[in-house]
Amino acid sequence: MFLWKSLDMNAVHPIRSELSIPSDMRYVVRVSLAICVAIYFSIGFFGYMLFGDFIMADILVNFDQILDSAVGRLINDTVRLSYAMHLALVFPVINFSLRANTDKLLFAKKPILAEDNSRFTILTCVLLDATYIIAIVLPNIWYFFQLCASISFIFPGAIVLRDVHGISTGKDKAMEILVIMLAILTSIIVMATNLWHVE
Image (cartoon, rainbow, N blue to C red; front, side):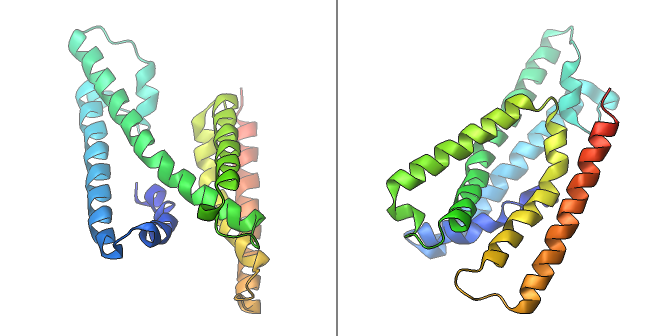
């Protein structure tokens, strides 16, 4: 959970800068963490109630089972609903960061994204379309999850290497080249492993 949530930490500063009262950020973070903990707890609790000792590490794999009791179906639906709520709450935060970083990478010399509604709309639609197409095309979501960690290192590194403001030093750029190379190597290993085990 902490590793996955750390991918969203790059959204904290941009969200804080958009608040009318920046000191409210402490409250926003506390409420967000409380909601996340409640949702994760409910998924774990109801998942254990439903599957008992037969629960697998990936709780979503358990949903392929057919449950005979009405209580089992109710708990099954509760877990699915809580997971859907989690995705509904997390996806905008991830998309916010993705949109902001993509805009910085592709349109570094243009005015900030908040001032250009057409660019904001087009970029949002393209990213959402790409996300939905990838979600439909992938046979198993875990292929994507395995790539997330390495991809999350490539994208920020590309922004540092682009460095339109001239802030990065030679040492920073060398470090980012190393990080990108390691992330690409990791991605290749993950994809090769997935392809090797395809039946």
